[in-house]
Length: 122
Length: 164
Image (cartoon, rainbow over all chains, first blue to last red; front, side, top):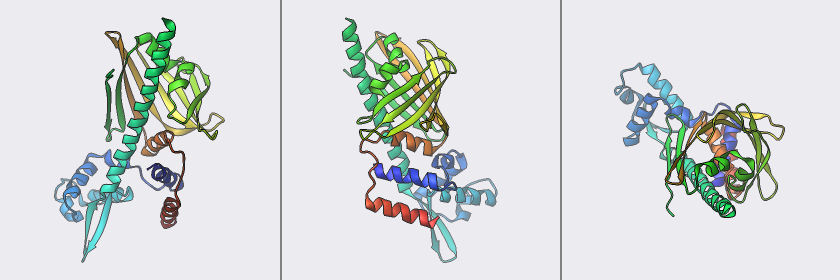
């Protein structure tokens, strides 16, 4: 886990082109696309049918999501199907879970520090 | 004792919300978050320790501190206080830094609100992170197992880098 995050951090540092996952999911259309392809892999045309925006901007969103490694393309004949890369979404949760633990542990230390200070005062 | 702890994340707005209750009166909890001597006793994740080089708790003032690993490796950060309402709220901007106090941007914005109820103090913390990379680094600082990288991971990393 730890080494994995470290590796990801290095990639960020070495590759300025790599996009930020939070940037990817900050956009409502992109979040909707992720929800769609989470159910089943879809072609860009099938995805575009769900939105009232130009096909070009759907392509742009798909490109950003792919660059963030959130989508996995699969070629079938002449069509490309985009599916959700579940592992990547899990990574976000793993990072956040780690952060939650760090905060929780530091607060427990603070409980002890507060307890010690209160006892000294009495 | 069961003390309230709540941690929620809004990924879309890149914001983390934390609420924690402490069994102490407000002025003591306020001191614990705003004086270097007490902060250094609890903020660092084990086995790291916190070392504050200087802390000037006033609007525009800064705290320059390091997380120090058991091997002596130092990871520096700077906090700049942007707003202070004594014993109620303070806001700061946090950024990683080099040992010469040069911040690495972007950083994150932290907002702390304190309130007292029946002798207990509740602290609400809101953290806004501009980038995921920053969030990763914040977590990296909390590693309990250091920066060990297995050969396997190193291989994957190098393979990934060569493809770019």
